[in-house]
Length: 262
Image (tube, rainbow, N blue to C red):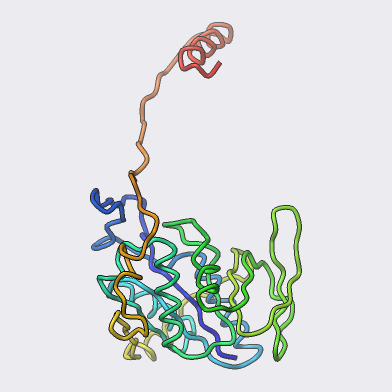
């Protein structure tokens, strides 16, 4: 089975600056890591490969520094990797992002199964995976918590719904997004790191994609725009009160009224 896993490099810190003009995160020069949900997606793919055979390849989108998460995927057992990288892809919303990644999937070849993490920690929309499937015109299932059965033409999974668990059987090719806990991600292997340190990573720019219309990518292809984005304010103000229980309860009541909580 040929499996593709979509992975993303996300900030490894909450102290990230925001471009005041575009409203997007300034990712250059900050500590980064693989999106935690993508570790579960990669582990799911590797488990299926171990049981059923085949290959596992990874696809990411971002600047050149995003190659580090692809190399990390190699140390966990991925067989190949591709990076979508072009300044024209920058500032994309979920729609433009999903379209760009779908174009990259088409260039990488045919896959029976595409696996994505449920969401990313820097966006939390959980929309890119399902939107990719729509662009690729393949069936998809989100919030997968368990792989029930792998067959020659179908995969059966359990989907975590708000108030129930639904079992779904879908035909290949298809896309699933997996939740935390489906498998425990393995640790990177130092031996694999040495063996794969010179492995080539394919880089695709806009010119390598089938659709070369710049208006479909990045900020140009994003129908939604961020009006304002800002980091949460840190409030370290505090008051220290002393007194007996009656005095303290009176102070608390007055404070709550002052703050208009009651």
